[in-house]
Length: 348
Image (cartoon, rainbow, N blue to C red; front, side, top):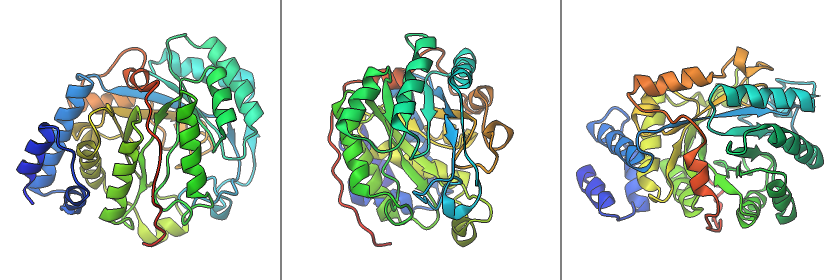
């Protein structure tokens, strides 16, 4: 294959084929072709969100050992990182949201573990929304839900949701992939803007697996997709067995994702933030406070979590402009349609 030809056809509106995506993912990250892909991904992102990358902010409503046992998650019961539980009060949640909004977050996310009571989630959401600026996008990152629950999220003031079918869902997690897909469809049918991602990517994942997930996320017509690497949780089986991909490999895969997504998907997210991914087409980073499924600290701001200022610094070091104000990515995503359908393979 020829990367210049793939880029030329992409610019002419031809979607990348599965075979082309697999080939690009299989290239060495430091190859000339990979750097061409990164440069083209950056050009596309700057064209779609004219040099206005975004920083969104997330905080957790609770911390609890989770029986869904996602092997890559510090909350998983099997990983034995956290063995106690706590929940924020409404006053603490509002305070966190207002701090992040004042610091310049373009959207506010609230996260919970899978078994957090849905009624409590709605109640907290309503109270937080009441204190936010009307124009601030308010995003739910919660467990799977029904159509009725999706409508309740919408009525509670949420703009959208973050929800992803993770790589090897059902193998590396105790979550039924079909249930995940059903939830994504319910959220979209309720009119919630969808954010998703190809994640969490590790050295164990094949180019074929990643390519299939890139095409799947693009088929959803989300506000954004992208690619995030799996962060090793010290002492866990996955950390010991597989390790982690490099930031350069993450940047390469992210750039391939950008080329593999329709241009209607204007956001290209990645996590965790770094300068090289900003240079390779990332236009959405997250800052986090409180509990974090990639951290062993109860307060990720004292561990792996980045501040909004630090995320902006990554963009600035890559000479990317940063948006001031409410998210254009999520505002664009409201009302988009596209139903999830995916053939789940349980083979490695």
